[in-house]
Image (cartoon, rainbow, N blue to C red; front, side, top):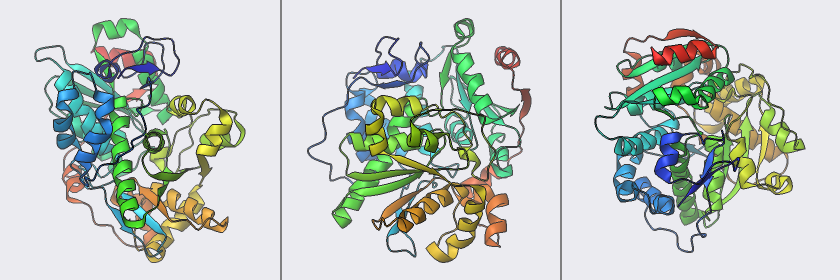
Amino acid sequence: MRFVSTRQQSPAVSLSTALLAGLAPDGGLYVPSRWPERFAELPSAQALPEIARWLLAPFFAGDPLEAELDAICQDALALPAPIVPTNDSSVFLLELFHGPTAAFKDFGARFLAACLARLQPPGERPLTILVATSGDTGGAVAAAFHRRPGFRVVVLYPDGRVSPRQAHQLGAFGDNVLTLRVQGTFDDCQALVKQAFNDAALRAELPLSSANSISLGRLLPQMSYYAAAALRWRALHGTPANFVVPTGNLGNALASLWARQLGLPIGQVRLATNANRVLPEFLASGEYTPRPALATLANAMDVGAPSNLERLRHLFPQFDALRDAVSAEAVDDDELRVLMRRAEADYGHVVCPHTAAALARIERLRQAGDTRPYIAVATAHPAKFDSVVEPCVGHTIDVPPALAELLARPAQAEPLPADYAAFRARLLR
């Protein structure tokens, strides 16, 4: 299969080329040149690596990585992704936080690292992986590439706008991982990364690739846990699975829509944002008005210019079709606090603020008369947000062993102004 830019000003490329480049030369995002035919027969396999191999095979067809797909899936995706019940018989959680950094980003980051490790020739100049993060992405990418020969990782996060544990995790790697705390917002971090990719002179000196959700290497595997969940759901209930996805930069949300596009038994896809309302306003009006991100309790969704919106509009070029396919609503901090305070009693689970946004959206659907069962996507372990969650629930939260190991390490991050000249100089130093 070939991949094209959302802006349609760059030539079609192979999957390997798209993975290595990250961003298309015209500044657009890579998308499949065509969608495989809808699957007439769905697999009987239940294990996530096998479902991923079946799902992704058409996208790897004809690529140098095709013969490695099974090994890549086994290496990267052998992580639990259970659907768990709650105290409400029509509400379920898809827990995606059982990986090494306790967030859903582990799936995509590990898959991307496994792909790029097979594409990086021994002895070549190290490939620099740039990643802007609003909290969880940077830790997952750093963990996936840590101490991998042939790679250097540069993580940018907005200083003071991630949780203390997220900040510690981001700076806990060292070795081939450089962590920069930027004096600005996530959008400032993302803008610096995009400028670097559009700087031809820099790229001539320094091979670059991306690990944000703009990378196909992260987006494609994220479809697999939606596929696996939807197949399990249909086997048990005989109906399509309905998801509520908390989202900021739209990568995880887009993965669910791409999986549905491929013919997986997925019904409704509802999105929940925090107080950054750019996406809900766009889906309500058709007018896209990016703006500086607001700092919220659900900081991993603090995005004021979601880059994957280009892919969403490419998937649904007609606005009416887009509005019929997906909807989004914003949940502010006051509502998040109330939900986190009630979640343990009402649902039987302590949840992170992002998962709380998804549960709040389900409650609104109920109030509007929608009684269908929904699966809320639980994107991160609540222990990553102890400073936010514990005051709401009134007790400490047990830390998963993998996260505890990271928090026990020393951490260090360099300060950086939100200035491209300073960033460029640091990359070349």
